[in-house]
Length: 630
Image 1 (spheres, rainbow, N blue to C red):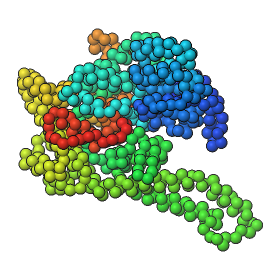
Image 2 (cartoon, rainbow, N blue to C red; image 1 turned 180 degrees about the horizontal axis):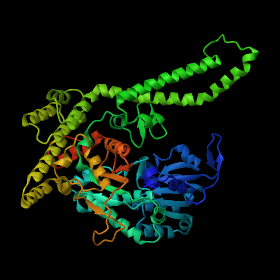
Image 3 (tube, rainbow, N blue to C red; image 1 turned 30 degrees about the horizontal axis):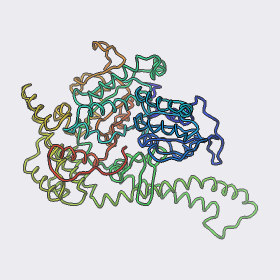
Image 4 (cartoon, rainbow, N blue to C red; image 1 turned 60 degrees about the horizontal axis):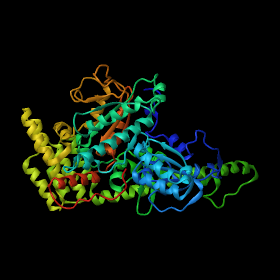
């Protein structure tokens, strides 16, 4: 789709955010030079956010960026705040009852000179009326509210091509046997709203594809209905984009998946730099906290961009190479300026030439300083990673899991020694679950040894037993020959596991890893090609621009662009696989990947353990690790 938003832009619109920070003025004020080469706005303002919207802005804008746009203070809406009666306030919050009441109280108290209210999604009419009534009760408060705007920014843009809805524990909520229908519906609507915001920001109305049954179909139907309702209004968020895209090749396809589609990817260890930093060191919202340092890892870090998908040993080699090159360049500068020789003397004929060398050296200092900072930063990160790798034998876990998932083989002695040896309890549980999902029918004696090794290491078995039961259910369903038998299995399973069984009964092929290529990537490739394929022929199609009745004229591809969304939590391994699909495709394909949240293997195994406990399997405590949602 030449010239489309999807091919070139991240799923975020900096212009929308900047316009919001400039009080939604179409023409932004002139910025004055603050002395560091960056403009800074004359007028100052206050930015008030809730915690969710802090996550939305955090990867996109830094503190210096906020100051450049005139924001001198950024405060939490739920914390006590002092009045700044001569400054305008920009609010960016979710449209909730608590936020609406707090805004009304702030306006009545006259905390700020004017209130510019921005909601991350559309403000429901009942909340709008409640806010209006509360402000109208105080004439002064009503006069202070300058603007109310729906910004449709309810997602976190982590980088170009990757986004998260920052909706924690969606997998548990959708698979909880005790979940109420109202809770499931509310979560599905929230996911649909987040995807609507992504589509609105990109300016595209996608064709939606998903497997039958389960959360994916529920979200697809809810998003289709929301898009259809919105398109009835003229003009709408897509009117301008629609007219501009007439010359475009076609619309993108939105491929919706449920985490149960391929469980093993959610728990496996990976040997690439970025997944390791996320899994082992706790990368969140592109920010990394080490004991002594805090770092940002995003597109502004050239080393990160160039090496984050490389295997860890190659990253270590590249750091050494860059350090050697840095030392060589520093030595060269010293030699040219005489910095390495205290006895260097200049005569009159060399004065001009040496002055040039000195000026060149001075000009190169900022670049050398930045290079040294980058080398030190990644040296510290790599050193910390190496400590964890040695302490936990992570290279052994990666090798063993790779043999099982890719080669379909396992060395029993290696497997059992890892389960009894180094590594956290989560590491061992992830390895055992990967073993369970790598073989359709593992030998019973070997399976017993695996379970015994887990018990010896005092590992909570809830997650393992949960996956084991789900796998058995899939196998029974796939083997059932009659409709009545299948129906009985589903009825029995739903009593045990609740809402998600229609997705889980799609067959063992989706539960087990293919080995050569992730099932997710293979399926996305097939959906984009649009050719007859038994793996995707029964996938549902929703086209919000097509008439509701009939299927005539529905376009099934080929698509050159796709938005791939994982309900229940995504990960960097899937993102990497989809990027590789982009790079090897001819003609080229463009893929954006998103999820309800970006999870590490340890975080996902805790969610599986929680579900196992809710289903009465295993035992022991399995509290999710602390940290912000990504």
